[in-house]
Each structure stands twice: as structure tokens, then as C-alpha cells.
Length: 161
Image (tube, rainbow, N blue to C red):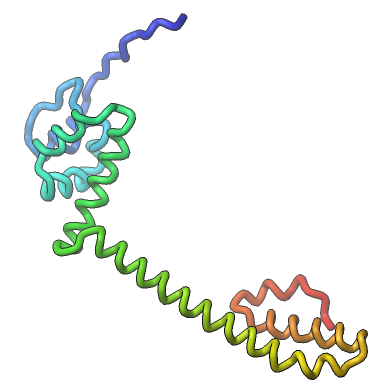
């Protein structure tokens, strides 16, 4: 049976970024110290500007310790997004990414349609060829399509026809 020993007493050499910005003494068990180190004061400055120190402290106190780091990280991300875009915040970023995904799906559909069209145009001509010539023609078509692929190094592994 393991006995749970109390955590070692930490000596605060420098106040955390939160206490530094709030101009208060950083106590040994400062709830903000683990998430807002003195080396990065801009993290807390953004969070304080958007949410206020009291709300952040209250929010972190209500969470289990295992979830506080993720919550503090999310607060920093959301606060910075809200500073960049006061109207939409991080939902503006999500909206832009969703639009980009829609555009890429449309480009993929166009590319698939072009490949299908090329296959349909080449198919009647290939049926008239003998089997060996058909295989050579098919390999050549695949090779030329891969040469136009945006990653030219990909074709270096293919046998030259």
C-alpha cells in the first residue's frame, strides 16, 4: 500500500506572470502559477484582458487539478483569438477552416471528374490494342499522369518506359 506524501514545499523565487501583472504577492499555493509562468507574461495578460483575473481563478478552482492545464491553455487560445477578432473570436477561425475544407472538397471532386473523363476517353482506344500493347499503353498513361502530379519526387521510383 502506497502512502501519499504531501507535495514538496516549493519556494517561489519569482512571482508568476499573473501575480506580477496583478501586482500582488505570489503565494506558495498560487492557483495561477503552474499555468502562467513568469517567463511568459503575455499569456496571462490576454486572459486577464478578456476574462478578468477573478473569473479565471474561480473557473480553475472549480475544475479538478488534472483538467486545469488544458483549461488554462484553452483560455489563452480563446483570449488571443478574441483579441485578434473581437466579433467572432475562435469561431471565426473555425469558420475559415470549414470554408477551406469545402474548397478543397470541390477541387478534389473536379480532379476526380477529370481523371474519370481521361479514363473514358482512353478506354475505347485501348480495347483495340493487343494485350501486351494494352498493358504498355496503360503503364504509359499512369506514368504520364504521375509526372503531372504536384510531387515530382514521387515518379522517381517508377520504372521508366
